[in-house]
Image (tube, rainbow, N blue to C red; front, side, top):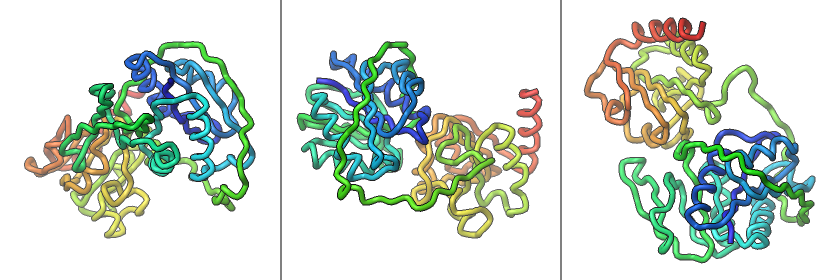
Length: 322
């Protein structure tokens, strides 16, 4: 028996959420008295793969095939399921991002496994296998019991601390067979955004709402995001009004994000918005209305005029970074 982790890479590079998955898997394997196997799909350099051992992977499998150069749910499901069976994996862990949400149900059908989606803590019990997850847009929690022989978990981002254990791991490169007819996705063109931090990748996000009053007032907010090395975001009413592009809209109907720091400026804190940002590690609210619901979700709050507060924050951040 083992714990198998699918370690998604981006152009052959791993990100923080990958190491978070390995850290979680290592802790879970300790509870189960078993080992951690990390699976990487696609071409990844040796040095990059070795990083997985730093966080607890005891075996690293690099599955390669030209047909796996881009994510295809059906083809990737076949590879992950095959490795899971050969490794006799009892628990399979994926990230609760778009890729994980697409792969988990397919794997569940293939392996006759139960799924624990959006888990944010280690299991409360192993017998029965009981996991903890947020529910109702983060306003409640649920204890989910998985009774199948194989369990699939998607881990919520920023829900588990990185833990370096500096283990050593054997790296096994495998040329997996892929049925060409199973690959349904064809990438015809790739356009990459440069010079700007992607919202879904950002550790720090500065977001604005209707309290900014006008699209002309966005300058200080953008300056704060740049000073912090973060990304900019907005609430749905702002994107609907055309003040900011729709790609910056966070919330239940927009992007679901989990940065380390989320600064909400002039955002009231409607349930739909909180559903998209409630997994943030720290939330800071800036609002002129002391009774705004956002303050209930925030760890830190500033009551006041954002147009006066933002320039002072920008100055303070720049002073600290000198």
